[in-house]
Length: 206
Image 1 (cartoon, rainbow, N blue to C red):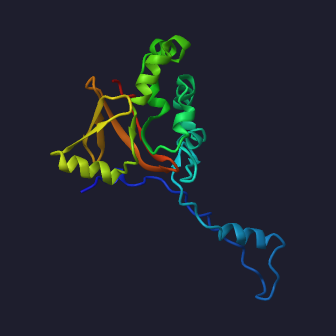
Image 2 (image 1 turned 45 degrees about the horizontal axis):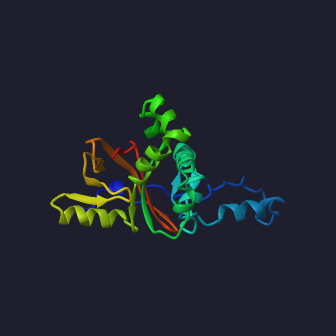
Image 3 (image 1 turned 60 degrees about the vertical axis):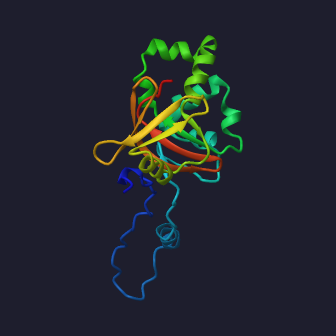
């Protein structure tokens, strides 16, 4: 069974219903702004998942969507510093395990600064491409691979090394990197025009 945390976790709710004051007479005309109020209340809900307070459109690229998410700003800066923006805006498809800002905060400040400097570009590129797997892998795809692999899905990254994905506690799924570090998928199946994004809470290290 696929853990519930692997379901698309966030949708935008419908516009809040507004209660109009009761009129003294049934035939009394509605206020002048009633049409606009009714239109807002009847507006269709967005079905695009929300990441960092922004709707992620399945018609936009990984880079374009990430640029709208307030919790992925460090990742976007890192992608830019590594010169990977054009690649991740290409046709792909790619599956990206995207560390949020809190994940990058777990990395020592001195290490982050070193990686973001021009001299650290090669190491930064190695780390970022370790978060990318060729193809479009949904939560169901990964779960299926895990089932076939005796409980663990082994994914080969663009960087060349492997990631191991297995079920964790409380209906979560955990990624184990080459150094034995573990990261939990906090939001799965964020569809992009050129792939799929799964938000994670710890930076993976090759």
